[in-house]
Length: 181
Image (cartoon, rainbow, N blue to C red):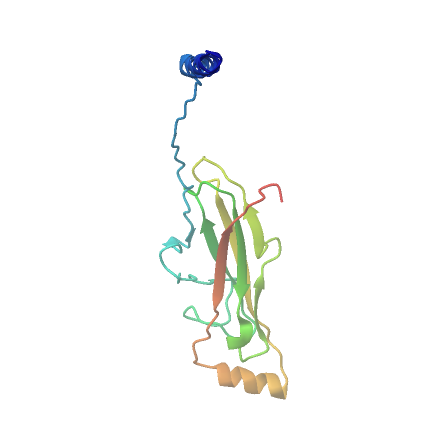
C-alpha cells in the first residue's frame, strides 16, 4: 500500500501541475503596420530649359553697352556687354544650392574676359518657398573685350576677327541639405 500511496501522490501532483498550466493563459499580440513617404519634387530650369531632363541650355544674347563698338550684335575690342542666367527652381520642394562655372579655356584672346558682374555671385542658395517666383536667382556675367594697342594684343585681336567665340558656362544645382547655411 505504501507503494500505491507514492504512485497516488505522484499522480495527484502531475494532475495538479497539468491543471495549473492549462488554466493560466499568456497574453501575446503582434501587429504589422506600413507607412509611406513621397519624395520631394526636384525642378530646376536654367534660361527656361529644364536641366533635370536636359544637360544643355542656351546662354542667351549678350546685352551690349551703348554705344557698341562691334556692329550687328558682334563683339569688337573695347566692347562690354552682359548676359544673364536665370535659375528657376519654382516647383522644387527643397532649398537649392547653385554654382555657375565659366570655362575660359576656350577664350584664346587674353583681352576677352567673362566673369561675374559686380553684385552678382556665381554661387549661392535659393531658399525653399511655396510662393511662385520666389525660388529664382539671376546671375549676370560681364563679357568684356579690352581694347589694348600692343603688338601681341593686336595679333590676338586679328586672329579672333570673324570667328565665333565660345563661352562655355555650366550651372550645377544641388539640394541644399542645410538651408540655414
